[in-house]
Length: 111
Image (spheres, helix red, strand yellow):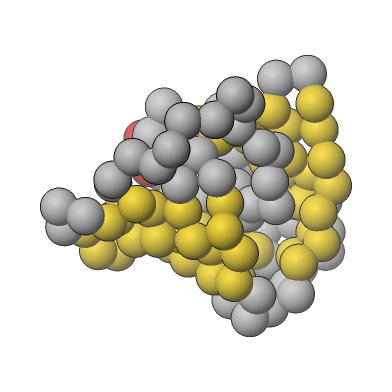
């Protein structure tokens, strides 16, 4: 469930090597992503945004300012832009596995 394959209109690979993949995410108010997965990642927000993130039967609303840098643990989710601004974020996805966890967190993500 690669985000660049299930939502190619919203995610683009801008750099990749054997250790990381860097994605650019961009959407408009009302846009939704299809369910997808991310490995452990660092998210850098280039714009402020408000989103609703869905994971299984849980959902959370997040509002993040431009210029924020956040750790995003590996997870499966979908998202919806519920704000009135465009979302623009960079994801630096780590290819090396992290320590095992009981449940992936529903974290503040763009997509």
